[in-house]
Amino acid sequence: MNDPMVCERCGSPLMIFQEGRTQGLRCTHGDWSIVTTHTSLIKLDPTVYEIKIRHGNYENLCQIKAMSKVSRRSLLDARKLLKTDHPTAFKGDAAHAIEARDVLLAADLEIEVSPAFPW
Image (cartoon, rainbow, N blue to C red; front, side, top):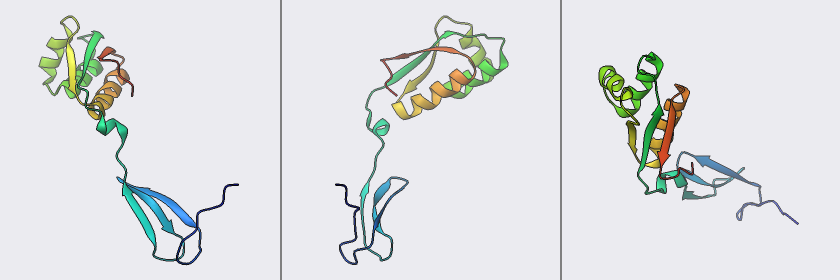
């Protein structure tokens, strides 16, 4: 049987909360609480990921802008990169790789992430 969690001081129900990187239990009527740090697993991933473009169109402005944003290069440099075979668009941690991946895919760029990207 699953009994609801109750406050050890007043017996009121406890509410689960998460605010930013803090999570815990809070009494719904009193000032009792217990908290801990919540760190997303993606932030703990030490792997350096590399995202390469399999196929891109150097004449497509949307793709040039995406490449520019992710690679942090000028539009002209991003366009030059898209003209090359399998250019590297991004290299970095998992949290930033997921953002880069989403930007590139939104621009309809075909990408390859290595090593295998579990996120």
